[in-house]
Image (tube, rainbow, N blue to C red; front, top):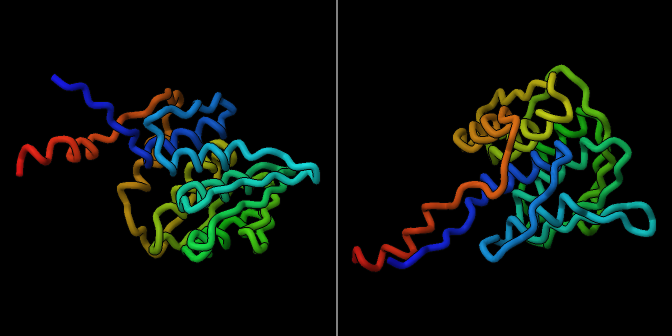
Length: 198
């Protein structure tokens, strides 16, 4: 029987990486099964400090890394980060998340490369976010708040575009221990087995 090495489920892997970074746990080292989105997530979370004291976090075309990274750095008090994305990424929707983070006190300004973010300590209470365009807006807040502001309630009064992904975020945020590697993506097995079924 041929052994199949399945890729990681990127939605799960990126959430686990974000939570591990928030909790001060070791981030994983890439291996041959990592996809581009996972590499982007790791780059954003490990963004180095430049000579000017500003970090540069490059998400490239990865929307998940960009949105989750935005919330992550907005919750790091005293951090100043330029979150970069490619031209296509900068055209994708982010306004509802930016507005929610500003209401939490973060300074977020548009710059040619993407966004300049100054992080703050998030308050308790509640914050609303319009997650009709992307559940990642709510997921980013839920995941980061679970560590940075445990008493902050995330409210989505207008609904959520993909409820199962938000549910995944809540479930992972509730786990006290998140190991690595995460589960593999069994949907990818179709690529290997489908030709036999045709």
